[in-house]
Image 1: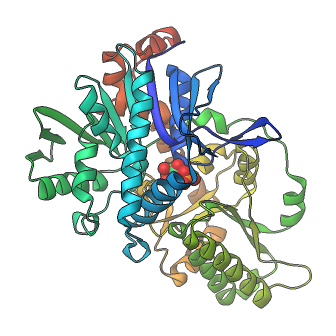
Image 2: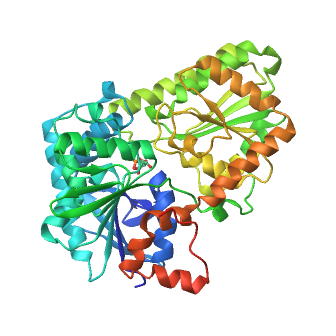
Length: 477
Ligand code: F6P
């Protein structure tokens, strides 16, 4: 097997479904997967993850060998999924990190199961480690895992990347398990966040809660005789994947005929501001009657975390909001909002990005948002990006039309501005956006977060560069 990297995450590159005894693989929809998959393909090694399957027999583990890397599946019981994934990870950490304490549901039992599942991942990972393996753990589902690995294996090099926002310490500590989570993460040697604000929030939490010395400038923490490096490196996408030719989707072509298109692409998650987007669009139609019949909001809404009550309620509310607007403004020939409630493949998304006059992102809180980058990378012609100020990516893509997602009036104004933007301005801002997306691509992210570690551990990454005869891309450290 190539490469000596072991990636561990909750969500893997695909979900697996069992159908009459045979296994069906579906690509997973997740920012994490879009970021990590190209890296694992490049370096090679093993990816250990849950693929969405539930099995009551804990010892059962299904390994699937793929060409470019080895995938090892971890199976969870129903109780584990409810306590670890739905209960603590998505019922406490997710809303807390997205600054929505009113959505938090705290149960001691769920945290106990979260701890146990982190131990289970650690035990399985330990069996896959070889001499010189770099272990790279991902996201808020596995915050305790670095500590469990470190306990057993003090010399193991461990990298950790946190893929969502990290909240201010005042909010993080409303949960009674804040201290243990921080200690869990500090089992790693290097910890990555998406932007500087999250990195600072984390360092402040470490300083206040654990009373450890922290160097904000260098991003270092001293803990149990080790120096831990804390970095902020925004994820980039593999832009060439979005430049290919793709087929049309005839139903969509028909649906939008003769109209301008505002596009949204989100999981049906309450952090994504879908209701606010539809309300903003309604305000736009109210304020600008001349556009009625001439413009459509095409909203991809990917079902997600469907066993959690709040997600079921949210999905219903989004659909109800869309129907209200359609009843109010639509007629027999024109439906202003079209909700596309299913998962779309990368090829289909590229088609949608290309036919959209503007991509509209109104997240209420969003770690980064890679959809914005995908839109820019996919387009052959300049397009307009309307981007919530409350996304991490707004720090990088300042040339977009930035918007406060809580203001329907502001959303309405930006929608109008997008439609009426003069060509020269559209071209100018688009080329600035494109430059950022291309420069800070997936390789840039990997190099700047993990380049040194990868070379240090001889994972084969150095060889990859030599083979391709490439120079190191703009490192920041
Ligand atoms: O990219 C952020 C993220 O939260 C990932 O951690 C997660 O895999 C993804 O979004 C989708 O959520 P889920 O894995 O719960 O379907």
